[in-house]
Length: 68
Image 1 (cartoon, helix red, strand yellow):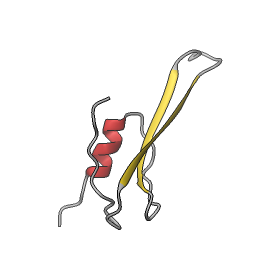
Image 2: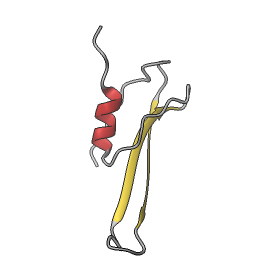
Image 3: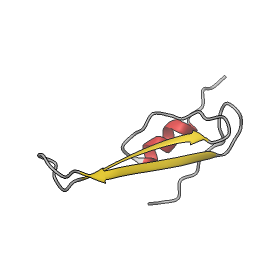
Image 4: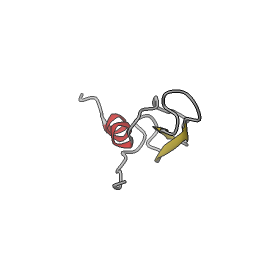
């Protein structure tokens, strides 16, 4: 996975952290497939975004800022 650059937290300026988790389906039609999710947040103020399927999408969402 390429290096992902994250902007600081838009609320407090703290360092952003990316979390990932997943599992392998053990039964059903997706048996054996891997399932993985990503989300980005701030350990300083505790704000976290919703999880998404791809790390690049999580980073793009996190790094997006509203123009003034």
